[in-house]
Length: 251
Ligand SMILES: [Zn+2]
View 1 (cartoon, rainbow, N blue to C red):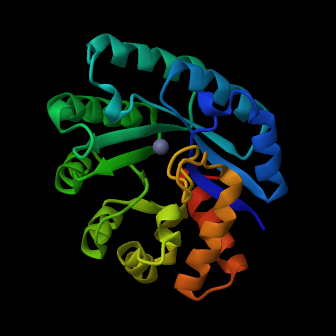
View 2 (view 1 turned 180 degrees about the vertical axis):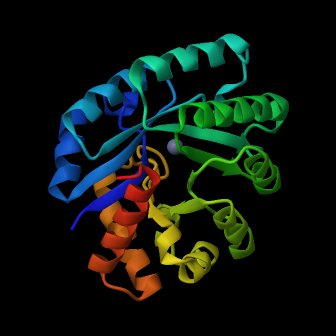
């Protein structure tokens, strides 16, 4: 059985002191496929090393929508293009719109979102989408700039989920499903086509335990919760999710 983590920041500084141990722990649990999201040069350098050693790890690079507070010059996009040409990532992400934490940079976010979608199209890469309180704008932009990929940490309605699926996207769910009162994601997961479902931790973020650093090995708990929601075996779920993951990268 292979567990797949469709979104984790393994290059993060939060793992600088024990990254090897974190990787060993996840591999011991069978979490051998992952998308390593890199939104800084530091993270990317670590991510490149990880991908060299682990064939199941995919590399994603981007300018994060929460990171447009102080510098939103075109030079940042030129620098990203150079990184793509030099390191050949497998995906562009995470990119998107975050109106919940950064409503004041909406204009810059839209510009960088569209520019990075166009980069993904130019280089023929899938995308990993961050969307917070911005579903309508995100959907409209994805319609105008067609790509394929993943809506990360999906928290919207089943109706909106169907619209993203129509545009060719898979939806990824994380530790929020572990909370007993998380009726909305549980309802969406139970109605979603299995062929569009992905699972992620967003490590080191989004831990179900307060003030705790999240790790990809914890994804096994999320798989168990989702297998109960779907009423299928963990074997069936891991196989379906792995197949969806491979499909995004044409494996
Ligand atoms: Zn993330």
